[in-house]
Amino acid sequence: MKNEQGVPDKGVPRPALKRVNAKGGTTRRTFLGNVGKKALYVTPVVLTLSASEARAASPSPCLPIGSPCAVNEDCCSTICHPAQQICQCLESGEMCTADAECCSGICNQLGGMCD
Image 1 (cartoon, helix red, strand yellow):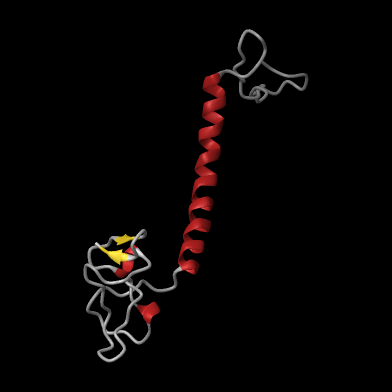
Image 2 (cartoon, one colour):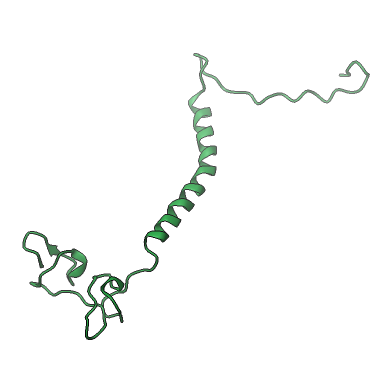
């Protein structure tokens, strides 16, 4: 086809067809397709923000039992032996306040002792 000036018409760009259901609303397929496309952009942003918050909350990992330490907070068990300067844990029957303090990983909160 040619336009009024006699130049071949390359066609007018048409907008993308939007699928609609019988009631005039968007179909599930179109809706889910749009949600999927948006998720491609949103997901990396959310993961980046949550990862940086996690890093800020725990700047360095705790030290396992037997590692050299300076203060209780250095150790995962929160117990740094004052004389030996190594991370240690509490044996069964010793008084505790948290599971991490016990070698078994279980602090009986009712009795306040390691299992």
